[in-house]
Length: 254
Length: 173
Image (tube, rainbow over all chains, first blue to last red; front, top):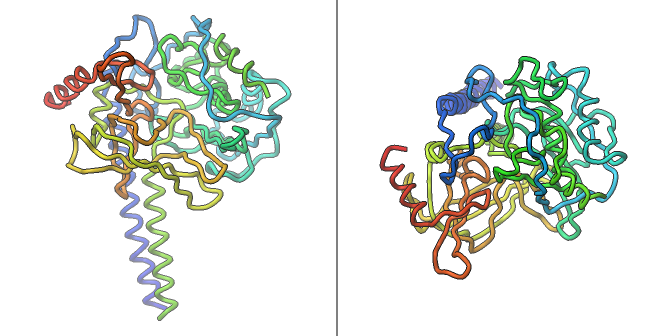
């Protein structure tokens, strides 16, 4: 019995050591990322002046001024671009929130904001169900929304399970990154003095676009559409749909 | 004695599972835009190669699927010499059920690619910056010129891209 406990303790210490090493490595990588301010375009195209291409994802303590959002509202959302995923909704869908994971900065308004974001796409399709205790993306017949620590360059991630033959959505889960400061700004373009925080309505509207079957857009000309795949702290322009977003939702209407 | 072995085996499995979970994989929907310098700096391995095989791993019915992509290497620009790499990311399909994660690159067998890869514990690689770390090598329609296409479908001549890449690596990028 005694030897079993000794063995258990030994393995416990080993686990802790390995986990510490993992955490150190991740923290180190984050610091290196924060120190790198170069923002050249990937294929050498320089963004035009005034175009916000910089994106989020730095932990609060390492945010630098030039990583902050612009707090500007949509300026050119008349571009008629959209892209579709391999899935689509075929009818009403019930979503559930893991309330225990919601950051305290959002408490009290989270239900209203999430419902507003869903209804930006379609009314009468998304219904809020009872809360869930889901703590990860799982194919468990629960369309879960929760906050969790995810990849350091990710602000939100949506997992969709669907039928390969029909494209019909079977389940969708959205995880918002718990590493970053979340807020609910009052009205666009008011950042409420928190340009380094991430507006829930802005990013929820984008993520829920994936629920209906819209894909990310990456062309610079699409930067003011809701489905543009890059985002920033302080950003609110994804709250309202642009021309391309509306065309996409009309095509995919369940 | 047998009980003790079983107990030790369980503990070992727990430790390995915990370590794998802690290492995590890249997930992406809304991404940070990475400069070419950043892509280069964050990559442990940069290769030009060909997608040989796509598979899906699913630990259980409820766990997210993992897409496994095996790529043979034609040229290597950064990192230790290897002949092929295995990339893992959320996604894939089992039977009629498929799993999609917007923001992650998609692959098809036979595709020629340039990849910026990050090594994770366990030896598997992920793509740096989601779609941003994958470039597809294509031949321009109506000509024999090879081009590189990025995640936003912007193209650049392959030669010019490789010159830029190798110069930046030589320059310590």
